[in-house]
Figure 1 (tube, rainbow, N blue to C red):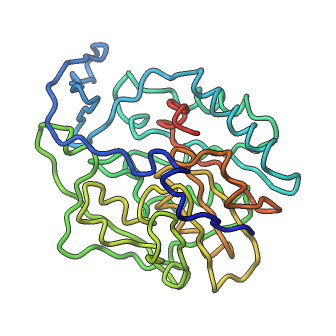
Figure 2 (spheres, rainbow, N blue to C red):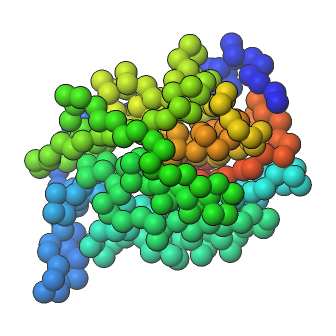
Length: 319
């Protein structure tokens, strides 16, 4: 397996490696009213696209950009044909947006987005995970899913990819004296409640070695320093980064996995470290696909393209 060959060229190789900055000013509001029915309330969407329903904050994702979804399937096909081998088993899964579980009419039909993406795939197996999720599996003030709630989702992937995990094999940890407020809070003028932030550990997460292209010297799965940043969700694998290699010295098999990812994978991957000897994460939002041969040699690894609906709706972000 090839490794990083020119670390000193970081600034020349990558564009936009840092995660997008979070706006910190409150936004003025504009009102979007859902069709009037006896059961529905008026929903106000502010200029940042944030709206609130029963204490839950959402970011409006609508309408579906069909051309962007098609472009994503084309991108997957291109990577598969140009860089992967016949020995790579390729899987694709699309994470439904949190707003899909809201009562707002102006939201993307996830089933339609899935169908469009799957129809464009040439030689990859699609895995649908939306039925394993509900609104309660997400943070109230953030768009991400809660790690402690996605074991069923992980196992839905595992049914096809050949693994299964048990929540009882993990220890659920709470962060003492810390109240989580997510990425939507700075964009919303109203009052919000903090919520607990939990993370799961076992022998594999505690002994795995994480090689992060952007954070050399830090090799742990959970990065508690990120609690003091505007994006505390980045405690999971230190957040977005172009290229990461996770080595499991306690692996019971020699299986390897490559994940083309966005931020959702950061909290999912720790749950499957025990299933693989090595997991490589590639984020094409921050790394040009043409540069992959300098960092990785595709042989017989399993390959998973795991993207959120938000990325599918703006796939131009993928380089």
